[in-house]
Image (cartoon, rainbow, N blue to C red; front, side, top):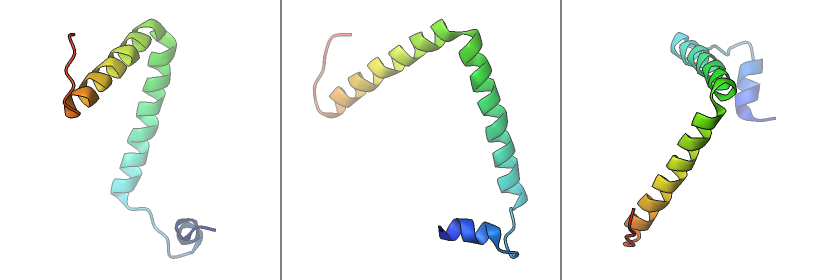
Length: 69
């Protein structure tokens, strides 16, 4: 068992309020992501493809390779 899990199972464990807020925010954003995925799959696919292209261009630029857009 991991030490983190042991810590949470012990009576001395506590979750700080800031951590609780972050966890709450993550849950909210995950819900929004799922909603967006269901409502706009084509737009999400286009954004994903654009991000992949930009990532490849940036990687090439770092390695000193330049290509036409």
